[in-house]
Amino acid sequence: MSWLLDGRGLEILYKAQVRSSLEYACLAWGGAANKHLALLDKVQARAVRIIEDNNAGREPHLTTLQHRRDVAGLTVVLKVQVKRVSHLQALWQPHRLALVTTRAVALAPGMN
Image (tube, helix red, strand yellow):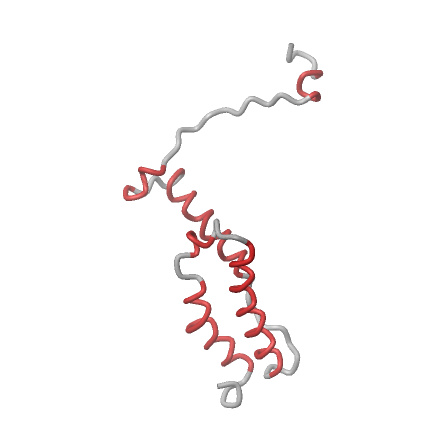
C-alpha cells in the first residue's frame, strides 16, 4: 500500500489495521518477556521506516507500544482504585501506609 498512500495515509492505515492488533490484550503483554515485546516493537519500527520514507523524512506521530501498554495498565488501576468500576472490584486493594525506614527518616527530628 505504500505506493498508493502518502505518509499520513500510511500512518492512519497502520494505526487502524496493525497497531490495533498489536495492542489487543496489551495488559497481558505487560508482563511478557522482553524478547517477546521486542518482536512487537520490531513491527512498529518497520512501519515507522515505511511511513518516514513516504513522508519526506518527517517522523510519524506514533507513541511507543511500551508507552501504550503503560497507559493501559494505569487506566485499569485508576478504574479499580479510584473510580471503583463494579466489574473490576475483585481487583480492588485496600489502601495502606507504607512504613519507610531510611536513614534520613530515622535521623529526622521528632521521628524517634
